[in-house]
Length: 227
Image (cartoon, rainbow, N blue to C red; front, side, top):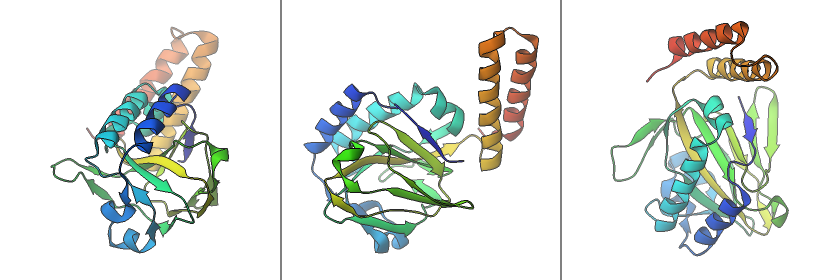
């Protein structure tokens, strides 16, 4: 499942994050690359231990916890601390797949990367190029979202970032280990949850059918979840 989630960060939060990141010290983006990615990656990145990265990361993690759509779609068990990249002057990231296991440097924190997330922080009209292109069985999907919006997609997907030919593309990126490993099962739960919310808006949360459907949702989650 690939889903765009609007307004994860409000305009005030976007501005605060951009101010902190603009003043930070950036390094070569291959600092966190695996062997395959190192051949494809041409961008800049904040060091994981950067004070700006930690502060903006906390802002993002707090916002994710307040996003019902993110929680329903990802069913997060663990979220890798957000990282940050910057593209300009033709920089790009050629086709690659994200590592299955991500380990936070200098710690024993590790996750299985079920989902990848890109949170756009630059206004879409402030740069040319820089589309995130995600490939699945239906073809290639080119994505360039407004600042504050997030794209959530399977970490197993081939994807790339097109060259930025004007301006600067500023994003956060991170990975999620879901309570539900299987993407099809996770999609079923997301669709069922959305249908329950739609029906409840018409009938009310105490309608007997809503109560039964909610029971079905939790029984499926109980069957599929790994916690």
